[in-house]
Length: 131
Image 1 (tube, one colour):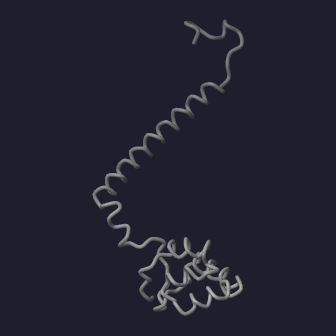
Image 2 (spheres, rainbow, N blue to C red):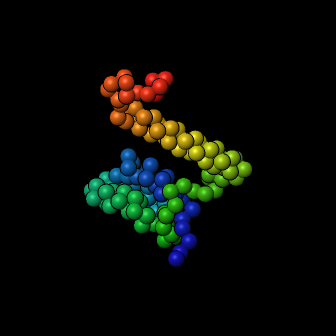
Image 3 (spheres, one colour):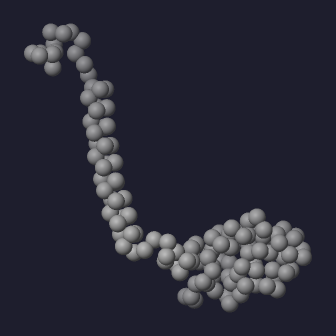
């Protein structure tokens, strides 16, 4: 398997959908020649533009060096956004929240069972202390 491109699929898609008929995504991928062709022909008469967007979405679009734009986000660009320690803390908080939501879900289910269960109609059937 060849190495993936250092350019992201998301970047190509963001440029390709609104400006693909002008070849913006091809310029981004380093394909200057076909970028100029797309610019002059309206994305090779819009057919090439549609094909390119589909290829970007399925991960088969390649940059000028023949490497596929397979990653949605460039790892180097995201490395400074969420440092490893912070990502670990976020994971822990997410797990805590998930456990709390599961506990609340169990309580709601229990309450629903109590509220929808059969109720005695005759007060004499309720037993001592109205229970």
